[in-house]
Length: 378
Image (spheres, rainbow, N blue to C red):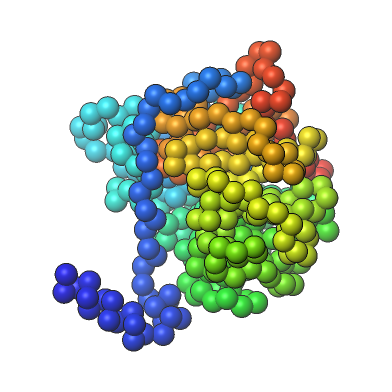
């Protein structure tokens, strides 16, 4: 108790910038992960034990917050690290940590092998271990994406508790850019405050969901230079409380997962507020299917997959809670290949999964692909 009082007094007397640079990142609140029987019938079959067992003997996946399909056999996975398995194994352990405990902020986690590429069978093709040093002392990478409008196919990785976005060459050999200042948070043109996600406009501009400390959307040009921002803390129109996801449709309408306000907010490309879609428990990720322009939301606490039209009409959903195949503790990001397979990242259970459309599946119940990536420059 005395320690807590001392720290509270210290926080009150210390400038916020110094606190941000010297204190360890706060651990997120625990998420539910032990509900195992609520996966409703849906139009997907989970690929059995996809990317399991973990390819490094004696270890398993840590928290897996990010996944992105570049092509059908090149799938990027961002994990917060890997968990060394105890000996003997915990009772009930079944290939991934979420069968016994939450992988999120697990004390057993080692921040290592955070960025990798797997094929459609879940086999590891590349591990970018040379960049693990960037995530030391943090909670690891958060989300990972490639712009469909970039012929270089640079890889964008959001590093939440570093308060930056990293941009890598497609082969992982170069760190091309660090946007923001590592370890420093501020609400200005050159810093972020726990950014969470990003998405891309046809002209190459980037919108950053910034974030959990800040409460705004930041627009960058194609080179990563600050252009503008919108949003303030609060619960009104255009205000945010935990900006956790962002997606853009073909008409450049911007969908923002305003997580703690339990809603999606919709804006035009310049930040003009257009609509609110309320009554979503815990919107984590928002995604627009290119061909149909359906808007899909990963809702959590418990896990549910929601489908909307662009006017906010809820069209379809299924409950996907739990550790059974096809279920989630926290569906954090998902991405789709050309065959309609959905690849998912689970922040709490600590596993990536592959969901395969069932034969005869209703197309209206399937998540369509996003904008197709440009051909890769030679």
